[in-house]
Image (cartoon, rainbow, N blue to C red; front, side, top):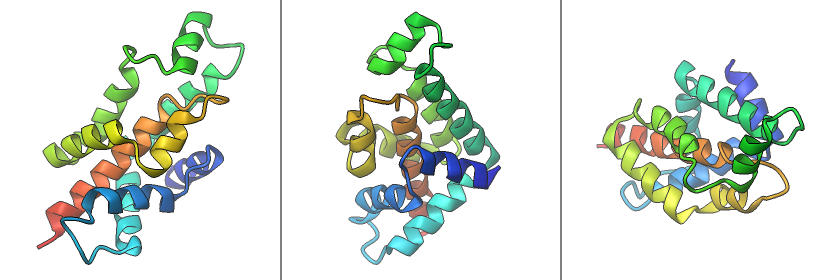
Amino acid sequence: MYQKCIDLLNERGVALSDIAECVLYLQGKYYPDLTMELAEKAVKGVIEKREVQHAIITGLFLDKSAETDMCDPELKDILMRDEGLYGIDEVLAYGICNLYGSIALTNYGYIDKVKPGIIGKLNEHHEVCNTFLDDIVGAIAASAASKLAHSHH
């Protein structure tokens, strides 16, 4: 299932290196010797968790469904506009962050607000639905940063 998640992310234009760049953005100030290689290893570690894989598969299914005529029209409208009051996309992201503690949650809130790198690109992409994807990517980056923070001496 890990490889399926990597493939789904890649299909939607997200590489592991894109998420690792967000980890560097979050953790670089606190971990000056953090490398892209270590950041990417942390990202892979987060995605290896079954709960994270389930969130990725579920969120991307919902995003893809919104791009079809098979989606309920009202839900499709909400998802395609990434309606600010919808909030279910953030709830799914919190599920990922909750696996990594309070640092992940605060990192997620911050990265969701400033939207650096790939997160900003996904958020601005209106031809496809990335309502869940941008939050999932942010949650993975925030969780990987938390994982690094807990292991850094």
